Length: 276
Image (tube, rainbow, N blue to C red):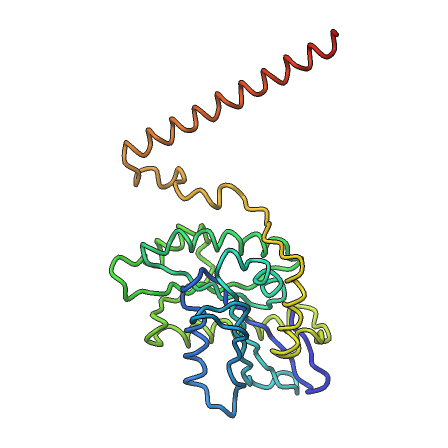
């Protein structure tokens, strides 16, 4: 839910950019910094970046419009896309007021996009209140990239979830994506309960300290619903070759036989124990 910073007399709306690694999250924020005058934003902060990869987060704050006699400031935060960094990503997503999911719509990246969105869906379902979502279909310049309807089907999203076509490395679609997210964020000020700004979320330095607290006991475990990760779902069966379908059925049959044998062995062992 949005926060209020009493020290600066302004609302704080956090827009978190989620998505798989190399999908274009940092590229979005870099382009935003290129087009927004320096007087209306902070510097882009990326703690401990490694060879162009976001290890913890990217952070920039933008000056927004006035709302009810107070200024609105938008904190744009991108999260690491690597699965091994999920324990760093999760608390940032949970603190979001709006999520922008940057999807790699290329044929090569769609599997990672689906897996990452499955993790996001779990995080969103944990929330007490609905979390506004904008999906950016990035890398539209790559031959064979999925269209918005195709990507919507892959991610199993309803028609009312806003999508934006983008080629972020060229700046295309970046501003419309941000504009949508900002509008949803301002609307949430009127519809959600506004709470005092937590000190650990006040700026990039305190946020970094907050995220570092998870380093001692990193936990990447997250319950993922099986159907969300089944990249060869029944709806896509017509895309599979006969050989792939046969192999899938063979593996399923072997698994079923193994489970049946294990149950029989367990039952037999239990019978012996009760009669001995």
